[in-house]
Length: 370
Image (cartoon, rainbow, N blue to C red; front, side, top):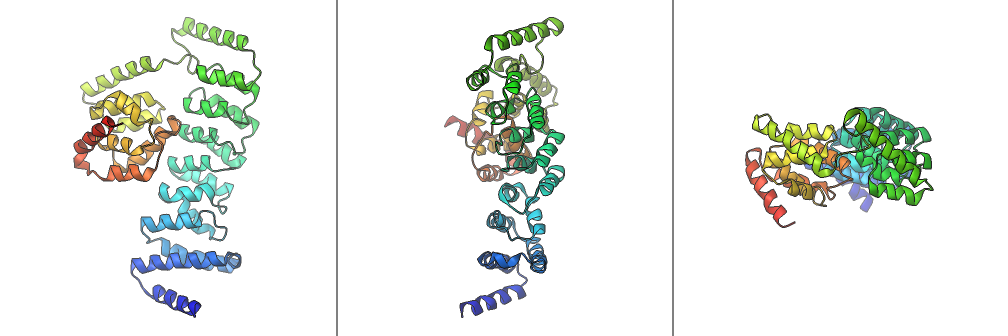
């Protein structure tokens, strides 16, 4: 009797053309499939399911697609076309599918690395147990934020040559250094190479983990820095970076000149991040919004991404660009600011484009309580 009632309900929903009923039908079909997944692997059944779901998903609202992605993220029965569609959707929808779907194979993940956004690529790099072909594709693209995510993925199939490439990339990308020093596949030889360009705390971690000749390494480091200063007047990239305050002072002078000349725009924020210059991003955001650099730095060190959202909305960052800004900042800043991206999106959406001054004021007020 219950089954008959369910069938009648599904038939009524199928005849309806209203968006709400079509969404209810889609979720009802999902629930029905999840009750008997073993019967869904036949090619003809898969083809029929694919046709049904592709028709229903195409017009579904964001929240329904998100719910569908969460329901299907770990399921083994969904049609591959549906999973491919969800994995390429908005990043909030795609994230659970990319992270866990057993339907996605290495070839699918490589396709996402080629075709999808940086945010999607980061999620691919974070996916547990990604294969060597996926690792190689990430290394080939050499996107800094994606490489940083890969460096932190202890379960990825990173072969010796790939690990060597990651270590070499960490000369330029500081966010990779800490996870690599602690990576289970880092060899003592590669750790000794990293010793020459990491900070003091990571050198201590290398010494604690590996049997290394500290005196010899310190001597090599001192000679490299001395030689670089003698030949160019400055330390080589990765060996003798400027201390934070010195770098920030240089960035402040640069941004002050651009601001005085009327050439500083919100688009410069993305440029700074793509150039992997987090300090420059902080200074630019502070100058554009009339914030203090210290407030911006503190906002980036919290588990409240809505603070960064307010700061960015306060300087006129476009809504479509904010997700990229947040992903790039996290890639350069050891995953911070942490926390739920939904809060950040709600904070950003609370202010219309012509209310940037209100968002900026909200940021200053929020930082006063942090």
